[in-house]
Amino acid sequence: MIHNSQALEDVEGEVRNIVYYDEETHFCIATFKPKVGSPITVKGTLVRAQKGELMRLSGNWISDARFGKQFKIKYFQMIKPDSLIGIRKYLGSGLIPGIGAVYAEKLVNHFGMETLDVIENQPDRLGEIDGLGVKRVASIIEAWREQKIIRDVMIFLRSYGLTESIAIKVFDRYGYKSMEEIQKDPYRLSRDINGVGFMTADRMARQMEISYQSATRCRAGIRHILLESHSEGHCYLPKEELIIRAVDLLQVELEIIESQLRLAVEEQEFSSYDDAIYIPWIMDQEDRVAVRLATLVKTEPKVFKQLSDKQFQSLVPDFALSDEQLQAIDAAMASKVSIITGGPGVGKTTVLSTLVSLYEEQGRIVTLCSPTGKAARRMEEATGHSASTIHKLLKYRGGGFEHDENEPVQGDVFILDECSMIDISLFNAFLSALPLEAVLVMVGDVDQLPSVGPGCVLLDLISSNEIPVTRLKEIFRQEKSSDIVTSAHAVNQGSWFPSNVGQDFFLI
Image 1 (cartoon, rainbow, N blue to C red):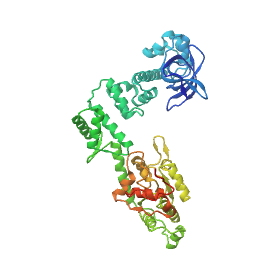
Image 2: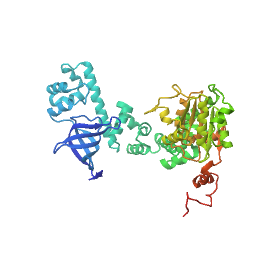
Image 3: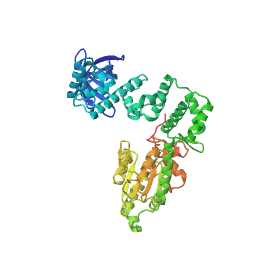
Image 4: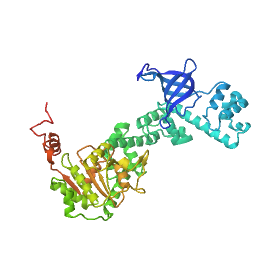
């Protein structure tokens, strides 16, 4: 798609047909008839657009390889019709619930060119129309009021460079007090509205002449820094580091930041533990994980048959397992919660496959899962047992999971692979959905891919010394010859690559 012009152009006309409309994003493709010229195709944000509405569109002409010349909308503005035919058509479009083609005709016949003014400023007069009862009049007034406020919010936010789709989110959040709430505290947009960041809210606050050193600004800046740290993998920041970052971002005195942080902690806007400062919901999730794990460990598992030595031997792979691998299997079979960790090529997959066979021989229902689809597919290939992502297992539906502590997933043993990639939020959701009688085996390599979100779950669990951990170190079988594997282990141990670089590497 190529823009033919960077300058915004305006076109006025009528929405003739809605080709496509997304209720969530408000993206729309429509046929539009300008006042002058032939109908055109327009695309972009058109919030709650209706066939027959008059609009002024601002945007650019683009050329689409498949659909040809189109008008890409940047901004839009509703235009009140200025003729009886236009008013009748406008009201009959279905834009206002309670007014269809029949009542649009009656309204225009009775009020003429004053029809829209009556609806907006003299709504009590609507009762003059036969058939418009009290309930219908109330519905019309409410719908008109909502449309007006939404459009006022759009115009207001547009002056700060925000889109119409943001305006809808604002109205959905704050309702009829949208303008009042924004003007009182523009920083709440960065807290409440997805798509509005601190920098945007700060720019709005500057234009509203809100004090540079205000408590609202300082606390919003601190929150912004903590949220940014989440994307760096941190659940919290040390108090001193947080203050230094805040001074740099906000360009206010150190004493002001220290004072506002102290007050915010006292008012529970932020949480504090020793020298660590959290956003409360993150600290809450850490606490929930700790409590849930402790409860999981203490809860007695279901009773299953014990395996004889003969049964065990029959399920061991044709080749002998290493002592480390046997230790990992023994620990997993003997523990409610356990961890198996190690670098590449140490046989974690072999251990998993053996564990699945042993658990199933006992009659246990085994569930395999991982944070990613790719890892789940690898588990399936290695074990011959079905595996899924955590999101699929817990049945993620938009804003949350169907399975939780009130509706746990079914199963006796849960093997969770690639645990280094799990952040604190996902791990909290996963643990909450496990039956307390279940056995949990966690597998991963702390030196591999970290979590995208906040928290080093696997590393912290290993460091806690509260859960049995088996560390696999011996490079297993054919992978001993791999330069990639041996070099990875050498780096982890603080050594340089082997001097005899083979086929997997070359030095320049």
